[in-house]
Image (cartoon, rainbow, N blue to C red):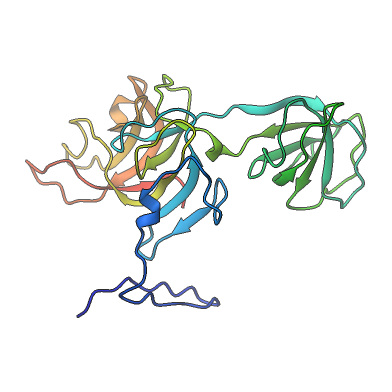
Length: 260
């Protein structure tokens, strides 16, 4: 049988078989200080074998492809009152925030807290205006507001989680985004694998005992087992050991399970 790339047939959607001489997945293993014109931060690529990758930006140099990278962005806008009213069913929210550039918040999330009610809502952010001379900003949402907002209501803004990924050891205070497909300079755009078969540096305890198949991220981005959670090991499950692991087996592949 000749060489070829597998087919994905999504029921109800057009399917396509990639021919032998078509491009392979090389673009996933490149980095650039210039954003790819086809992709925005957070965009998702799914390969036919089920591997999933996310387009991300390195907030600091990523030196190794052996260790996972963490989500490093904190809340972009802390709990604050909206600047102006928004009508019900509109998709714009008005805040005061200095030094925001146009569409800096794209791919992030807005959390709305309705004053005196327990009906918060979360919306994806599809863009924003740059801060003007008065620090006024308009945030554009991916779905309409379920109620009108007044200047008694409050919001928080979370940045696009993939806008700042790092291999920094945060001492267990950050969650992991996945495995970098390639090492990258600070500020470079790269792809991060979030699901499917991959390799991540394991501690000696991984696949070393029967009935222990799940793996967890350590504070440094390597893998360990649940028995050591709390001893430099987080409780964030990375996935499970994919290989059959008889005695003497080398470091195994895992089925990464961060974000499908």
